[in-house]
Length: 260
Image (tube, rainbow, N blue to C red; front, side, top):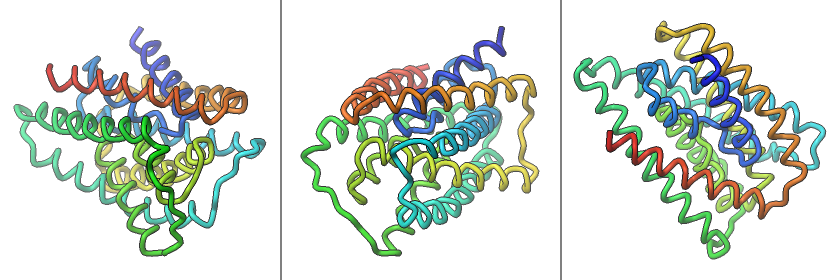
């Protein structure tokens, strides 16, 4: 039963993540926190592995799509995102190692609070995005710092980056909803890959249920394929509406996790 629940979580989050470009981690992380089946380190690991496989499947599937990755922007963002991903995972591991069992819930509350603030900010932006001036920055310094911050935030929170990526890609690099979604997944893939390699190399793999990990990855891949197929049938406005609904749900779940 637990395996079925986790497959459904991975699949649903990945369908939504593939369509909107949020990666799925921002849904998986707070939902797993709510169920409370695993500790915070295990939840971050499960979320990260699922998002990694989901983003890889989405990128491969996108080769037959009209929307493409802007490599001139995507490559340096992904490269600096790798550095940010490692830094974010390092900070998370450091925090966990210096936290007692009695206060571990405080770490979850902090993560939920930061996630809540970021999500509210992105929601406000998304509703009013037409009022924001778009830019087309080409500076390597701006691109590198942007990728670094996106990778760090996503890895530390265990969400991959998602909504923050979309907002930044729209404002800083003038990408529409579908283009920013795909480029966001490209950045997420490399930052999550770096984060996973860092975790394995450092011997910080948490105790996990292999079956749950397998079904979540399977759900992530199948969800990515399904979401990519649906994306082709949606307009940019429909993608935006779905994104807003998801943000509202995440805000509700985050508030619930903080309150409990």
